[in-house]
Amino acid sequence: MSTTPLPAGSLRATSLNAARRATELTAAAEDALDLLVVGGGVTGSGIALDAASRGLRVALVEAEDLARGAARWCGEAAHAGPHGLVPGDLALARENAVERDVLMTRTAPHLVRTLPQLIPLHEGTPRRTEALLTAGLHAADALRRTARTPSALLPAPRRVPAAEAGALVPGLRAGRLRGGLLGYDGQLLDDARLVVALARTAAGFGARVLTRVRATALDRNGADAVDERTGRRLRLSARAVVNATGARAAELDPEVRLRTVRAAHLVVDAEAAGITATGLVLPAESGRWTALLPQADGTALLGLAAEPATGPVPAEAPDSDVDSLLAAVREALDVPLRREHVLGSFAALRPRYDDSAGNRKDSPDLFRKHAIRTSPDGVVTVVGGGTTGYRRLAADAVDTAVRAAGLPAGPSRTTAVPLVGAAERARLHEIDGPQRLVARHGTEAARVAALAELDPDLADPVALGTELTAAEVLWAVRHEGALDADDVLDRRSRLGMHPELRARAAPAVTALVDKALHGLLG
Image 1 (spheres, rainbow, N blue to C red):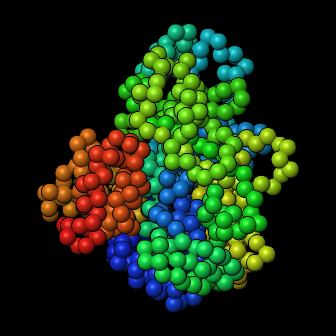
Image 2 (spheres, rainbow, N blue to C red; image 1 turned 135 degrees about the vertical axis):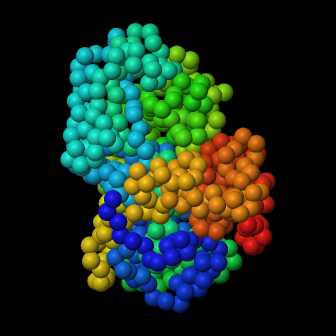
Image 3 (cartoon, helix red, strand yellow; image 1 turned 180 degrees about the vertical axis):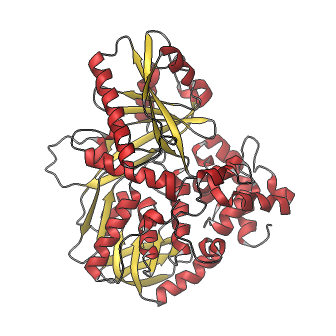
């Protein structure tokens, strides 16, 4: 694992908390920055890290919390699979394969795991379709080899007989099943944790990460902003500004025209669906894909290729999407999923520049491409891209800002910058701590667990039926920038994906966050 070390005392250097925010907000308002990044999703956090690691003076402002928008609710694999191989998108698939390798082997091995995925083959599956799917899997594997991802991490695809297909996905309907195609991809265990790790790593290089700071107007020399916690108005001066607010980019640059798709997902009972460690992927004649992917918490995410959409970001999947998703897997499973099996749902808007006449039918994969636009006033706006390719988009955005403003910076270094908690997989397996914590915190898992050793009360789960402990809540406030209970429930943990568990845990988490913010805990 090639590494670039963080500054000495890296835990303190990378810790985000209310006290650091207050200090750095004052400093950001008084000092001239090289680069101001607006938007605290995966793109904005990646840009802040890329720029700070080049030695630039950087501040990131986010109107709400890190990973508050699509970065929290994308629910996708860190992929470069066959569904990326649509006509004309080979370059995108190749780029995703390279970026997936960076995530899995260098920057975030603790946050990305190997995910086997099965495409079932039935007696009614045309041989031509099977041949095309097989070719797609092998093409994706060729890209894996080009990216030099070890086969021990992502094995080569293969055809499996019906008995093995049924063992891999116990819920699969056995009637007329004649086998399946087994492929492998990467899976982000928690999208929000990737964003938090990016922001903390950027902070370790000196970036000022300022949540609850809303930019109200941008220009080539900085931004007008307001501190949402106090109502204070301030001016942030910078030599270059990047607008990375995703679906809200047009609010800060009215000349940006966006088209969006809505990506809806259901959180379902994995046992009811018959999903264990292998995901189920179902191609459709339309070229779209439905995926039922296992999660580390015993649930599964059911997602369908995104639909064109307008309007605000929805908190939950619309009823029409719920019905479509359940219908998409009904014929594939022995016990059809119904609404009572749905534990929660979410949706997000994915944007891209509207640069066509509107008479071309878009593939959902086109929304994974990124675009960078510089306004006449010099503000750089970035949209599009998927979570897998965030690092490449960030590097391109910083390159654009550096050239436009004549900033003193060399090339991007982030392929060799491990995120907070990262280590080689062999070392991760040796960490003395619960594997659940290792999968979320990597090398910091032992420190999280140690909080409960110092105060046994912190080892208790926050509510019946949850695994989240008081120690994790304290860690989120002290080191991960959580400022209220919602930050913990919806982004530092995955309880927000389970409305019933969230409601059960909310009172205890609210009390713990209040105590932690006032220094009364631990």
